[in-house]
Length: 459
Image (cartoon, rainbow, N blue to C red; front, top):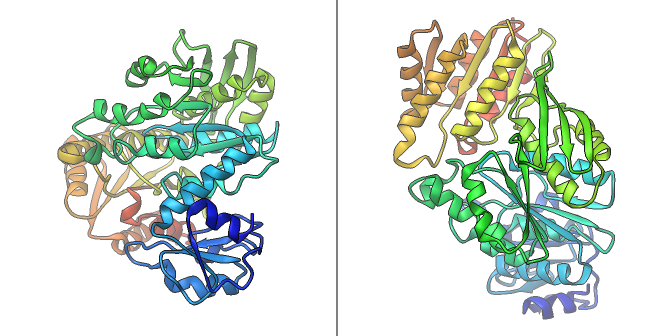
């Protein structure tokens, strides 16, 4: 599209534009470091950075123009609301290229499922999927703007921090297929009192489906099953339950803590062995398989795609092996009780008889139940017989440490005030051959500890 055509779509005025017929030929970006020659740079205002300050640099790096809320002295499309304009542009593009839009949501596992699904579908046809966790009101339209006329499948991870978020996102990109993974305690502080409120918000995805759409529901989650009455679409159940049409049978764990199972679909049965740790990955794989089944892929093709898939997104049970035999498992992208529980169990299964160290920080947005949920995680650390716990931060992480100590299972418990302290202490305590698990909500920044440990050879 030309700058002039884009301006008409989003209601923008052109400022300092020498050629209104200049073509935008590449995706847009909100991070000036990710500007692609031929694309647009969307100048948004964040908590710490104002994108308008980087407008000139974006043009120098090849952006055709800046989408901005005010003139910036370089070619710009000026609008009142940059976020709204990006959404309008994405919807306009979708209306003209018409890929099959797949929306997925859930409290945990969205990014891993999205990555698995993308790798299955890419083997079949041109696919564009959400990068990293760009699943909000800015990230989703930026993903859409990476698609073109050759794109057959558009896989969109959809995050919901509060009620109404999914209604907005599905308005930008109406899905033909809607996948709901699970309902847990992520974002409960902003959504309401408990899982029922989270389910109310997540169910907005299936409500957005048309009568000729397909809703894929997790048969193992009662809150997700409760969404069946909220959609006009056809329903396909997946899970480990016998009532699921896409299900796993004969689940086992390999000696590398990777799950293997028989994938069963209406088209038949085929073996799968995932290259991801933890039994909880079976549910993520089944969710991806359910989408592929709904799209008409054969069971053998789906199983082969799942078995060949690799971890794509950093900070999610990301494994680094050090030369001294230390295994660092970086799961510090985010945390809630469900993902913390799954991660601890996966790491303990991976470790076997090896010594285990857990470096754990706070799980955010847990509302009034936060202290109790952290204490529950502390008891799990003890029950799983981790050798060392390093609890990072004041407040709730201290409740975790106290609960681990009170369980009296022989765990060596340490507390530190911050990430810098965690890096120093973990560096001193970790021994050759250990398995180290690092996890907290993203705002804690504990990924820095995982990266420091991964780059350090013990002793």
